[in-house]
Image (cartoon, rainbow, N blue to C red):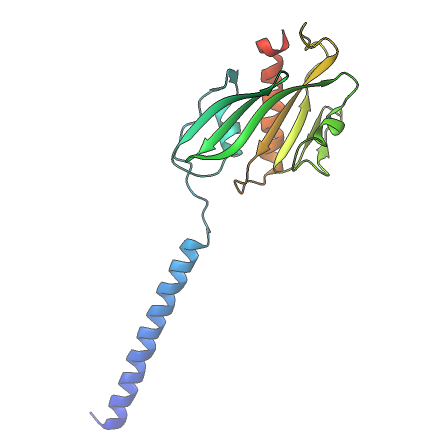
Length: 186
């Protein structure tokens, strides 16, 4: 083989190695860039903090991960919050809160993060964005310890990367209906 042929062969091998390295690097970066969402390896129970909700609707509003835990928190006399954590990091909160009888979903939503400029339902009972929403229970939802208040539901994601208006709306409506049928409204 001539010196010229040997030089071409080395250039070709060098280009092939360089091309292989570029392809390997691109594949690695692609895997790291999150082209595919992380798998949701956990199971969502049908009852969360005493309220029965379709697990598929809850899972749609949660990030990927391996384990799911829930905890009930009662920060004051009129609020019950069910905090869901994925792999130990708080990811979603489902809450019930009593507000003044003259309040409405849009007014109550102003008290919660990530509800600004939310879509409002035709009946004005629901306000939601891709990260949070507020729903007003039916007027028959009354209890003696809150005689002049209405019960609202709140769904909020917690820095989980989830931003899905459709998933939040479906979960908010289902959660509100589940609360309306629970002891919280009797």
